Image (cartoon, rainbow, N blue to C red; front, top):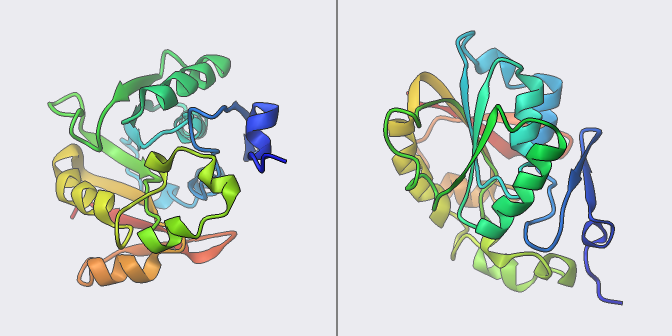
Length: 215
């Protein structure tokens, strides 16, 4: 019994009825943002001119693919710090025949996405947000996954701090950021007590995913 995640054994993970390839090079996809793309929860916050989407921390590329499917008029940049994860994302982009609309980028957060070509109407991000105490207590199944994709520092907010600092410069005037923070809402609100956000409902309730405007 390896307690290896089943998706690594079958090389397949499903999100919103769509099949994705997965192996040990990327985290098993399970983002609640997938639900919001499928059910249109985000649509009311988007401008009709939404054209450029960024999936940051794309992992195996599943949210980038689902965004391209949900919004036929957009192009998507899918970025990750891990070349291994991007190799898996490439398999999924090709599997779903979306190479003409999804571009993969190696980037540490937003650092590798600069200049006028990297300004977005919608940013999706399911970042590393697990705090150090929770990391230490993770079951073996999660410890089989790349720690880089999970660990967020002492309070889980290290990546998110830099993201919120850098994001406005990569967002058009009416752009929105959809951010998943898992079970870390208390840590998020402690870290950003004055930030006005909208908590979006998912199958796990109202605490997992938030939306924030550029403004």
